Length: 88
Image (cartoon, rainbow, N blue to C red):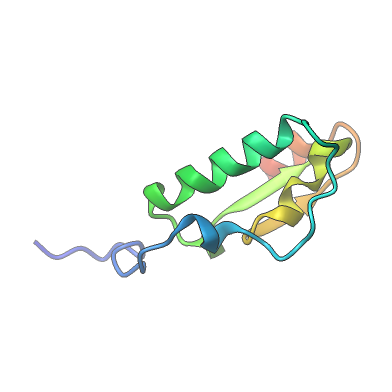
């Protein structure tokens, strides 16, 4: 059976493919490190190309999340991350 899915020709991705070259600026012991690592661990298994992923953040320390991912990202203003995300 032949498929015309754009995901059919996706190369195998690894955790490192989702890591950016940015230095992490979270406090030692911050839970954001675990969330970032687990997200980077799970994404290769989904088989979605990096250029089809977008991380949208609001304010606070977790707002740096898109900068630490090797995907598209958007840093929005206070309280508007869901609104921005709904526009994608």
